[in-house]
Length: 254
Image 1 (cartoon, rainbow, N blue to C red):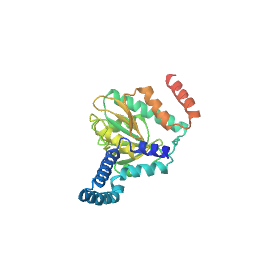
Image 2: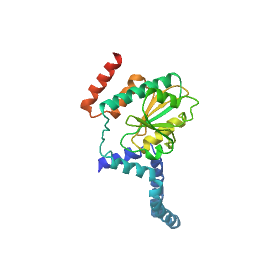
Image 3: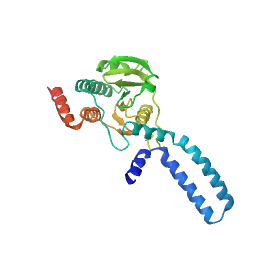
Image 4: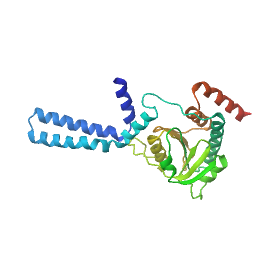
């Protein structure tokens, strides 16, 4: 039971649910005090109000409930699963994404790249322009180049294909998210809260490279740290990760 409560706390941490739970706690406390002090009118009002709250709770907590059910469905509530990509696909994906992101960062060109993992992103794919094109550094750079009609939206990658570009993503309403983050970072946080997608963001103002996963953002990444983050979250089980990354790094240096 302690572990179950721990997982629930992790699930709602940093969301609006925390503030809602605080509000419910205050109402229960006031109701208890009104009973003890024999404030019958206030107690009657609070009891009827709380009855309405119990009916409204599934609606109020809909995002959190949906997130919990999705995690249970993909086996993530009691433990983590590992997304698998074939070695050749993974190597090509990391090479193309890293080279494109480094070019975009150096030239301060904003970018939002979403890599689909276990949870399908069909709803968001349909908001953009279907490409189903082979992933390449040149194509990624050209999509986000200023003046391209698709440069303001997100690119969604599935396996080694750019499935769609110019996609609209849900913005995060996390109250703990820093006010300095713009629309790209909030969209990256939003999609990561609703799925297990890995998102790479390039800031248009500073060229800063960030990776967002499961509602957590890692900023100020250089080329090597970006590769490590991609390998860690996209590679096969741990016994193969070190060999894959070593071989990849050796080929790059050679």
